[in-house]
Amino acid sequence: MYSEIYQFIAQNKELFRFFYSIVIAFICLIIVFKTDRLFRISSYQGIRYFRNAFFFYGVAFVFRYLLANPRYFDPMRMIFEFFMIMGGFCLFYSLLWKRFEDSKEVSSLLNYRILIFYILAIIIVSLDYLWGGYSFLFFSQIILFFLASVISYNNYKKGDKKHRFLRLYFIIMVLNFIAWILNFVFSSFLDLRLRWVANIYVINVIVFLIFLYGVIKMTKKK
Image 1 (cartoon, rainbow, N blue to C red):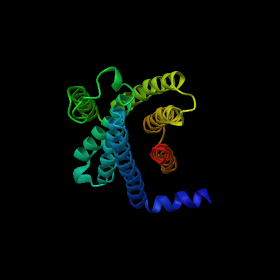
Image 2 (cartoon, rainbow, N blue to C red):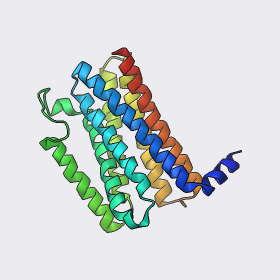
Image 3 (cartoon, one colour):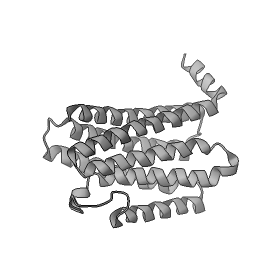
């Protein structure tokens, strides 16, 4: 059965890539709308950065499908990588914002702290373009989500153990950390056979679906 599935995917690679990109972009769109509503209800500033992360991820996966066009490969690849990195930075900052700002921050997309992330993202994208590949993307996200896993675990320990979102946040950060490691290993040391690529795509979709599940649960509570 699995062989037949992979054979079907092999025969319809572009359709599979398109479906994968659209599914994740659609999940991100739902998360953005629901978290924006949650922010308007609660006025909790950290939700803005959580929301922005999925806005960036959604835009990244819209451009992800356009990588298939050889004429636009380099610019689309750089745009995709930039938005992926910014998504990771915003998720990470959503855990730390209280340490650096108060609730009177005017914009979550245009302030000097986020400007630092924009600059770092441009530097990482430029390095990957000059060296070729996605090595700096992988290393930056692996380090980022390792730190995010540690911070979210500490937040969970210090917070209310019954708070499901804190536990879910920790689980998601760990899954993101594992997913980036697998992406790095498969792209750097193993043949990028369709079977491995399909498995990574499935893992990525599962991670985004778990995020969506957590957001829906939080929205219902509010």
